Image (cartoon, rainbow, N blue to C red):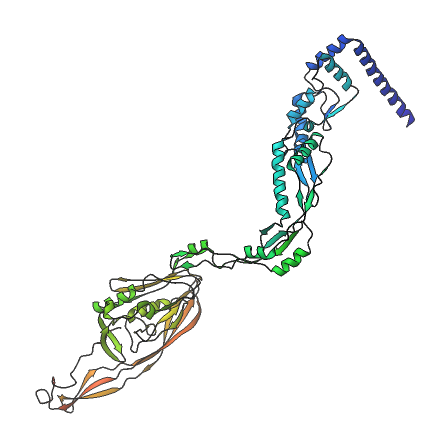
Length: 547
């Protein structure tokens, strides 16, 4: 150890002595010192023994030093910071870059190059000789003034944040209300603070700054007021029948004020308090309902009209009072409310209708085909039928059990939109086709087909009518009898591939039997007293018609 150390110490002393001798000689020789100064001034490399923030650059050109210093200066721009500690508040941290001290590698290299070249030839020569024995480390960030305007902007932002926090700030983050328990309110002078920061950067920003200022207690947080400002009752988007547009949905927001107060009381000043929010999403957003509205035909039916245009007129007129009607979810279609009284004052004409087992002509006759076609369309959906009655006699335009008789004062027909979406009833005539579409939004993949199941028939009887216009002992059929029918209707459900899923009972309908009417002769025949056409019971041929 000893033998190894002595030669090195001796050599070091020799080098130091040699340098000192050179310096003395140079000082004694002004010409030589000036010559060194001229050489230094015209040199292309940085003086020896110079480092920049600890990085050696002596003897390098500016370009070489710039490459080496770029990374360290980039680090300095972000990691060299001034820290200001406030009483009762989080520290303010300002980086060199935020203070306008964005010195890059080339700028730092030029600072190092200019070191020792700022004087006359004698001064530059002396600086060169001095660097031989006295290394120097340069901190470029301290050689440039910080930007006061940039610092002031950072300070203003920090002041606003501190004021915000001192007032008990809150915000909604995901499904939580985040409340910051109010910190002490710091009272300080912005100009003084800017001066301290500029001075700290000039000195290298080595130590945090303690800024002592007066403080006041924050205002208490009013959770009731926050609850009032945030509370929202959930509202799903809906179709507004007045504006014919979709309303704006509202997300429901609520929280437990008492639980929030307990959490806040247990927190420290400046601490974030997380309060769970009860977020209730609407069933339908405005955007979704607008995209799904009246998208699908969920049920339809077409029945055949007759060539009786008075009857057809009544059917189409009743349909025109329904066409375009929109039912929101939960709303009921009621025949009498929508169509009203089918009287002459409202444009209806005479037409055939059933009265018990008798066919009569009444104003509005035929409108049952409108209600029946709608009912048949409903049977293709899972909408709920509230009130429906079968005709007393069968009709020709629909299968048994799928008709719906209506008349002012009864029978009635109504159904409810049990779909979560609005539906629209579209009705139109195309030649002898009478059409109904229920337009809404399909919410399932299955299809529904109504099914009529025959249960049994009811035999008809025979009644007799005495008529002296016919010879005694003869019998003539006045009208044929009609058997009665009992049927049950179901809705059959099929999946997307046509496979049967289930069936649901819809109704049980009974159609009356009508007796056969026979004319029983009691006279001597035509031409005798009391004979036809003077009889009280004239013969009328039977012509069944659909209603």
